Length: 426
Ligand code: GDP
Image 1 (cartoon, rainbow, N blue to C red):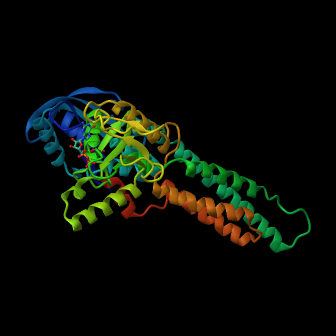
Image 2: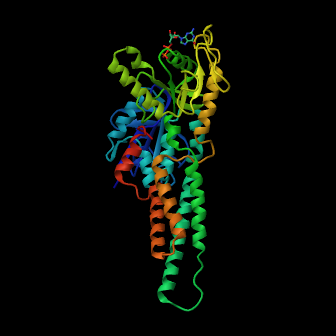
Image 3: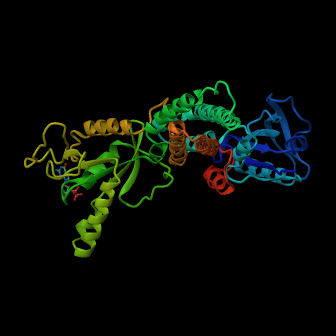
């Protein structure tokens, strides 16, 4: 039998109200022990919370959410108590003293929801991203993913592939028996090609990873072209993103920011080059080149036309008499007086939006894109194949990819890494 888990699910105390969630077979017993009896399911009830050892602990709103129609699919209880640290600690101690109850690991409630079929892998992943979303665009795109639209589509493809496999089997049987009569229709090939077209639309949509991590804007140009000053000027204007973004290394010269709701990482490639020593200078240049190579947007502050391809031309120091303005399409700015900075930020946010998924589009991360790309190829060649045995094998592979996307064949390691990034209490 499974343990019953509990955790503080609301934010860091002290706070107005704290929510302690309990999930598992002993959730009902725990609520009875602490509040006397089970309230009506799914109705908030005001109760005195007492522990057998310590007596009266708090007055709280409690909820009894019996499974399987609960968030985790198990019996659940919620205690909405006062958000003081001592109150929370006392209730947690009282819960811990009940046999069969223990503190939840990070993401364990969601993991139970997944293993009880309440959500699938695509939804769990979107939920993880939603919890760490910092900008409006991230929230808006993830909102559609959380609704389960993506999962419904993948499950639909899986069904279509399954029917196609059955049709291929039928055709195989017919050819084996060498019977007289009309061969079964090959309509499955059309169905499969329709799915391939739909999958290609998803593959053409920008990946969710860039949305999660932020687009990299790299400032490049020779020394003294004004990169560091522009870096600071942009930072001052942009909204700072407070939490570190997962998967990005952050050293002194990169900062996550939001411009107009779009997440970016601003990177200054100056740094080492200014220090003069030849070896250090070489390292600095190599690093700058590597940054430019992995940039989504390059702001080029050097001589016009000498920057990397597709870079946005920027001429700094507009306030100085020696300023040489750049031509059409370029942004002429002053980091000192801030002239042109707002227009530059507008241009960056427009470029950024085009590189990221839009609200309403299905944005999937690299892990899913690989499965989808493999499935797409396998289906495309299966649909063109005369050899029915090989076509059947291609369909089987594609179905396996759909299962992997939905989490039907997920490994423990993969689940550990997915749910490990959630906070405790989620
Ligand atoms: P970097 O080496 O490319 O990072 O260039 P810096 O940002 O360090 O700028 C070089 C020099 O130009 C510094 O002395 C800055 O104060 C100055 N500077 C940079 N941008 C401006 C600007 O827009 N206006 C003025 N007046 N000075 C600037």
